[in-house]
Length: 532
Image: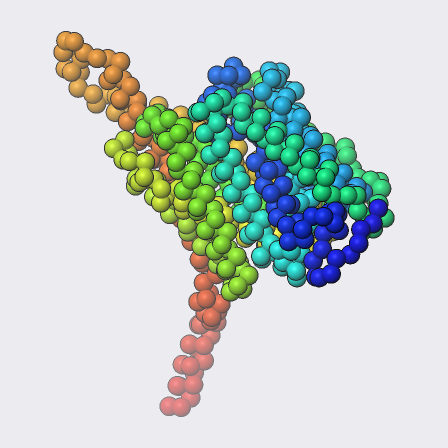
């Protein structure tokens, strides 16, 4: 059904007449934030969930990757859904799906079913967020300027990511970890009530049928993403290639990739078209976001190892760092907005700034980590991490929008988020975990051989206390070593950006070949001889 057109440049005709016009876009901001707060599992209560569900840490991390995979794979059909169904229908389905998944997840013990629920919740999460933010895009930027829209979008996305951890930790400490699921279910119920009371069905065009969508291709891409995530997540637990499970999974992953590429190049309307790969700079953007995510995976591996094994922090202590990261995220989004939208300066240089701040985070942790520090000494490096993550995420998305046409943008955005949300993080986590295991074993053997054997002859000797302190120190040394290598990699990446964007490189005259120099010298000598 239609709706009366309001006076003014920006209207939201899906709202009923009694809803104040100034309040309408803020309602959608609130709903987008509630969708971003939702998830299949919540990392702020990971330790409590391991005991409460009798699952391994890898099982719960796989739930997270399934949730992120659902979000990443669903991007190419977001606009098709928007053109087929009304905004009210899509928001109702997304909120109801997220509500049902959050109520079911705490009571499910069968892992494949748990992963499926988290995947579906990811689909609902991105559908609800997209519907809310796409309808207020013109309110944020009347000219559809993505240099202002994407920084604002990342305030909602990254800000709610940090806020979710803070709220989950508080609820798990004061009540029980399952209360976060109940809170999100309650927020989804509020969304359903708002949609039911305040909105109506509205179409700005005739509904477009869902013909021509390659659903089998979507299944293949989702299967490939989940296979890669499973292999990298469980790799250490299965002892990598010594396990037949890992070898079989590697073969099936290659087969899935080959089948997906074959289907992409043989059918008329594939889920991700081959033309997406032909845009200039698409590969550098995808590679860079993967490398950045690999470096940032230290948050979920190295930092947690240091907090737990060296400092023995409670979750209520380590979450204090998340508050600082949230401030860094807000500052990073504001800085990206100022750089790209207000000053209109180079995206390449903004990426260099983001990578420089990321290097500052890695170097800061390398020089700060010690068993003798106070938690407040980690605030500045943690803020740098949040700042760098916000700047790089917003800038990479703007760069992707600049090089793509609208026809292929959401397909490229799906590939981008497959690497951004899933592959980069899980690959970096696997590398950090394997590097820590090897460094820990090496340091235990090196430093253990230097322990004075006479000390063991004293009676009484607290062997348990000695080994606990010794293992904590070795974990500290190992984490510092890996942070050092990660800092080297990040600095090398920064130098590549600096060399690429160096003004002297463009102004420098080309250096002639030695043959040309020799010819010039010979001609000069001949001219001298002739004059004589």
